[in-house]
Image (cartoon, rainbow, N blue to C red; front, side):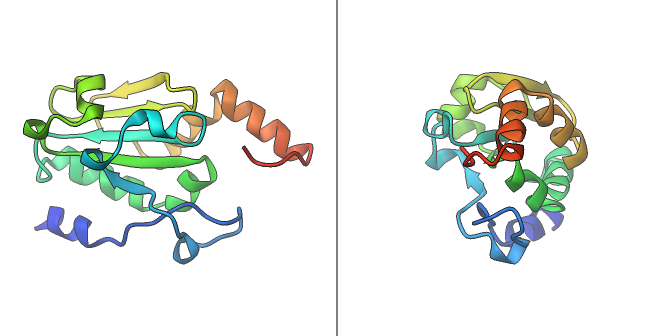
Length: 150
């Protein structure tokens, strides 16, 4: 039942500016792995990939609750959330990352897998991990110098 509620959460997207609210988000931020490849986000977005063997997996349900609780913080960090709860489908992300059961993977804009976690992580933990990445540090520096967001 709870898993069904999560799928009723509106799909959010990338903000037009940093002051946008969740209601202002326009481009999809939560995507199904069956429709995307990780390569299409190279140098554009930071994929967070959430794997489970079923959408009813309690770890998956908890992770999606965490992620949807603060989409603005993730959008600020150019995150796209990719979900895969169907091992039989064999998505490109599942083939590339080879999860066993539940797994959270944080991928930087350079395409490198920076974190793999077997348990759900809060947005705060994810944000801290992203903020330590060299590409994110450069973005923060560029923004403070008034350079365009990349």
